[in-house]
Image 1 (cartoon, rainbow, N blue to C red):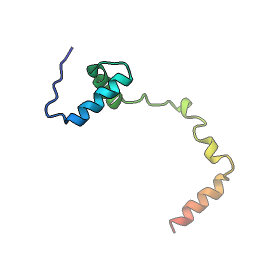
Image 2 (cartoon, rainbow, N blue to C red):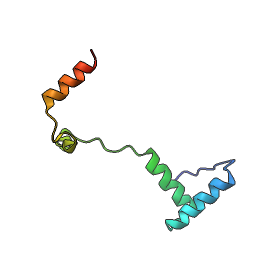
Image 3 (tube, helix red, strand yellow):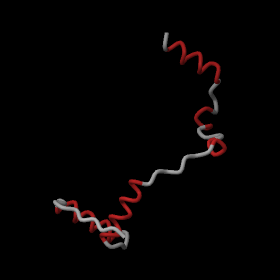
Image 4 (tube, one colour):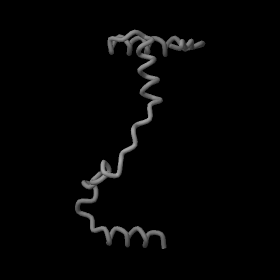
Length: 76
């Protein structure tokens, strides 16, 4: 497993990191690993089947044809 050394970390940031680690009942190193993992992990893309119906609550009472016409007219 790799080791990461961070130089010139501001004291205030380090204290905040330690506080956050204690709040999550982790060591400071574990907290840094968790933060980096969350920041660098790309979410799994959704399949077309998973996207079906996504956002339907936004379009519930909207007539599609009228919406498209308004959008097109806005560009004229």
